[in-house]
Amino acid sequence: MAKYILKRLAYMVVVFFILSILLFGLFKMVPGDPARMLVEGQKMSVSPEEYEMLYQQARARLGLDKPLVMQYFSWFGNLLSGDFGYSSIYRIPVTELIGPPMKNTICLNIVFYVLLFMITVPLGIKAAVKQNTVFDTTVQVTTIIGISIPSFITALLFIFLFAIKLPIFPISGMVTTGANYTGFRAFTDYLYHLSLPVIVMVFAGLGGLTRYVRGALLDALSMDYVRTARAKGLREKTVIYKHAFRNALIPITGYVVGSIVAIFGGSIIIETLFSWNGVGKLLIDSLMNQDYTVALAMQMFYILLGLIANLVTDLCYCLVDPRIKLE
Image 1: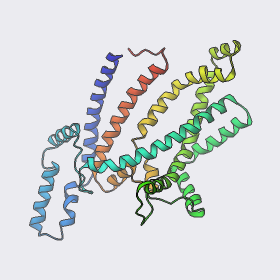
Image 2: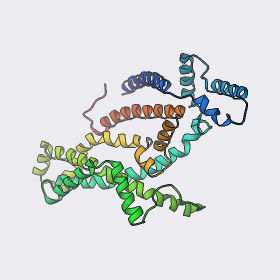
Image 3: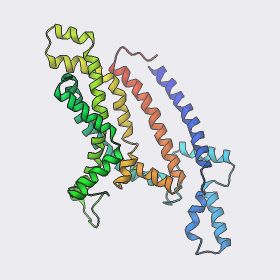
């Protein structure tokens, strides 16, 4: 096991290094000058000579006056040391900029995934146990409809129904405009604005995971060991939950681990539509404003999450299924 983990860690380092080169080169080919954007606001208040001097100082500050190869190794070295660069739009270090949106994204996705698993796992199990019944057919049709509707359409529909026609929830934002709540009142107001985005995300995610759980459990219920357990006279609940569902967890494990990693990734569509200040919205805003230092740092963070997720998924497979040996 230790040897396997060390080999995978070495593989992760190589992949991370190669992808960093590709992404850095890709962002450098995108039109735009971060140094120019950094000093653009001072153009009207200084002379042309002073403006050009400020521009050259900004280029030196961002390291843009060096050759491209030197820029890459300087950026990559800073990245490894925890320095993700400086935002040309917000004019603060990227580490300070990402902190608050990351907390909001984690909060949004934790509530979403907790509710999603609480609903879909029991629903998928019941649909599998009651295969080909009216209940199962209803679940199948409903989940197909849910999968077929894009999440942004679902979000717009829910905003129209529950924020405009029936003003139960706020349309967007994270706090009530003009309110200066503190303490518990501020917390409840935060949850109030969190409610509609979470409902939309849960509704959009119900179909896929419910069908996934149902399919995994149906495969497990068709195995010989389940028929043997039933022939021994075990209770049906024991057969389903102790024998079948435990083995159904093996294909579900990858989905669960991917969901945990996605907690940090943000939901770009939902955060943008509901003006939720998360990392997904921050990424879109950075790309739209050509703040490529922020976008590049966030992309590297997502790559690292993906590599860690693959390793953790393989290790979880080994823990869930003792038959799997990692050599």
